Image (tube, one colour):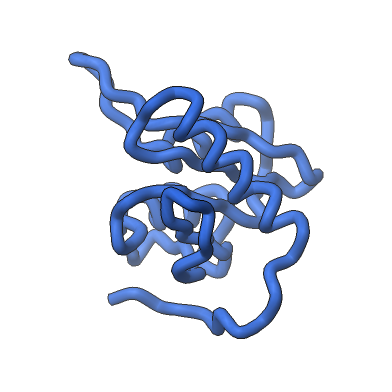
Amino acid sequence: MLARMSEAAPLDPEDRKIITLARSARARNGVPEGAAVRDETGRTYVAGTVALDSLKLSALQTAVAMAVASGARSLEAAAVVTGAEEVSGADRAAVGDLGGPGTPVLLAGPDGTLRATVRAGADA
């Protein structure tokens, strides 16, 4: 089940930034998804889908892994730019593992338009 937050509020400039970064990663790398996460200090980590024979990670999973590998202790927000209609449970769980179950995950279409904001969580 998708837990949607209100989409009526204007998008915060920092949230708009991570959507833009995610969109750029998707376009630059020619991958199905681009993602960006913002840690507790305001640093951002940007990634695309990883599709190797021996390793497959979604863009959000890759961005979370980059944040962890760089020493991030928590996440403030995450964004994914994709043609998919919803954020997968595995992606929400990965964001929730580092950010906690209340971390907002912004879902945007390939044009960067925000479609939904969902909450992360291990029970996703």
